[in-house]
Image 1 (cartoon, protein in one colour):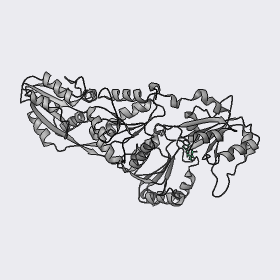
Image 2: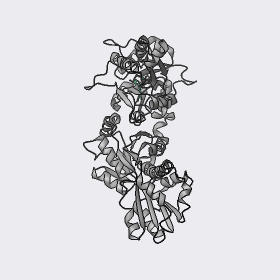
Image 3: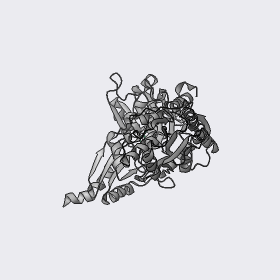
Length: 519
Ligand code: SAH
């Protein structure tokens, strides 16, 4: 039957990924990135957008072959058919909108011939978004009542075939995509067809992304101004009176962290708060989790500790040193079929300590307010505060990573406390085959302002993943001294946040890179 036949063939979603700022992905495209079996993407997809693709996802890059030759369209079409015929849900992710000079139509033709079901997911096109991020409204009641999107790219071997007198007569805003190499030809064509050479014009490079650039001039002077600024692709050319408005309406670069790009290396579940806050301040943020936590399961040591918890001393402490550790502790409790109350009824007075505000917040979600959070968020400070606070002879159960900080236990042992150090999870390093080359390239080009590290293990995971030859050009914003010491081993330029918290990390980044920091 045709229907089942089609289902076996899988399906292709031809989706636009927008112009680069990953926040401009549509909800539908974002969902498909999560659920597709395989993602076929090309060079126009930004690193920030790529970093939203789950690590284990199968991906096929059809941007450039080795040696910079573009993958021919026919080959891309064949890949889509081949993957769908394996029964896969295929996401073909394209820059901007798939039907605006995206050759989306051509990719569909073969799918239709092969009888493969498909959906089109429109995207935010650069033709409208890039001017918007440059403060250029493509239409305006006083200046332009239409806008026109035109390719500046010549078909094979020929010149760009455009009816310039017709374009001039439109009196609307003209937006040229793929027009950078033909700029002179395009602008001359317009003036020769009667356009006033003083008409405002702009060229906009890498729009909506960190480091977007805008050169505004006139039709007569734009080519020279663009060359002087060294504008490169991807860029669009905008012609029309509305271009003059950008001098008042520019905004994207003016945000506190506008124009900045950061790399966040925290594990995904905990990276979002830092990444999102930097984005809210205008930065582009690539999330490349350098480590992953794997619960130790089954956990015999934990089970034994919990079974006798509350029977060792008059006062017993539970100590948590990371939000992940706190979450895993309660997950494991559930796994063992234990109710939290069973820990409270064995006679001992139960106390709880957390290393910092993030861990305290994780406990708060479980209805617990820690009795102790040290003033400085570090393992050493936690150990000392606990040694001071805990009653003599107390039992201290520490639930944390397998290779936890060595600075926590000595003060406790010195105070004669009875310590049980239970490993809850292991830290594994991530490799990121998809992102590592792109990120190394961005780092080498100086297009990543800083990399954030929230533990020494993220430094090790990051260096293991990107494998740069030289780290001395990298600015590292580190959460504490131990993390900084690890980054220093690689020769990175170190900055340490004033406190071990996400607030302080954001604060340090704003201090260093924010609009009023004088940099
Ligand atoms: N389908 C895409 C366009 C593909 S053609 C869309 O709807 O946006 C590729 C051209 O798009 C580039 O040569 C450039 O002119 C333009 N472009 C795409 N992304 C851009 C960006 N972030 N900044 C400037 N121009 C961009």
